Image (cartoon, rainbow, N blue to C red):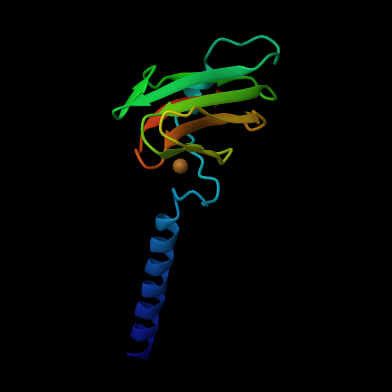
Length: 139
Ligand SMILES: [Cu+2]
């Protein structure tokens, strides 16, 4: 009896913990949430040149539609990345893994800039609209 109670209390504690973890999984102040994605596909991509210049993307969100349609943004490790997003509604753009975010005001372009020092595939999304803007592949 005693053991059963302890076990169920532990179970409930675990559930609460898990729920808390899930709740913050995509919050603006969340810890890095890295999506491994199809990293093997990236590995088979054609090798790029030296890490020079800036990799940049300009993305527009209008009426819940992403333009250009979500694709890949490829960068070499160490390359500077610049992602500019213009949304017709207030939102937040978030680069997973790098955990960079920028506030989006309606019609005002916002740019997230960082150095691609982590390899992998990272989703770039909006939080309110829950739209995938692009996938950043760093190798
Ligand atoms: Cu996110």
